[in-house]
Image (cartoon, rainbow, N blue to C red; front, side, top):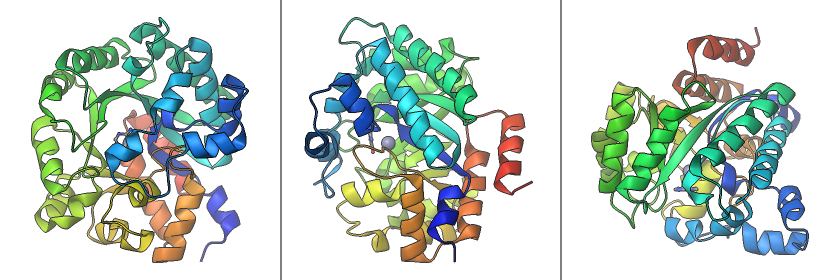
Length: 331
Ligand code: HPA
Ligand code: ZN
């Protein structure tokens, strides 16, 4: 069985990570020097048990409010790359919703340009390969969703590679986002979408049918429907699982022991391990791996296989996939 030292050093892939929900205390206090560590814990981190996804998401605006200037977005991006470097991450996809950062006069293009150029610099500085995913949100209008997907298209050739749908799954219908995903398909843009977290398997089916993503953000509650599990396996639709975030948010998952990750892995579903957010859910991939080791007895083989499935499902060109795979298998 791997010891803690090994888990820290294992090369890791992270596909599901929200930039605006992953601010360290250091970056929060550099943006707002009056914030004490106690206030960071009480005001910025979500409770260990939220009543549901909407309750969890209600904690997010505090961090977003701090990210309304180019300087702040740059600092947050740099800070997150440093967190990833300390966690043994070798490939990451960072996501954010450009339209949430317009309160102090930035345009959505400027938001994306700022994060993209900061990511570019940090890729060179840390050696972590990375791509960016732009999120539309459940409560956004069709026009906002279209603006977001057009940004993905306009930034083709940069580090921006895909569209995501995040936000309150149970509270807002999917309808306003169908056109954006149609546009994404038409322009051959990569697509993921959150589902099966705030709602059950019917929402995963709906998301697959109406948005046709190649990956699902979470998809955790798919485990409640054996037909869906079989469908995901056969179609190789990848689940970006975020175990601790799910324990915090999904009422039916009381503890890690009742998380379906092991069951889904044994059923042959393509999946990987993610943090989702490193502030709202104070965790790291190393901590997630430790929990899976302790609760399900996962070791080198499971971590290698889930990281290989992650890079296979990543929104990155084949040459990079081959390079990352070689690092994972130690060649
Ligand atoms: N689900 C939906 N939207 C989100 C999440 C999540 O877990 N985290 C940040 N935005
Ligand atoms: Zn998420």
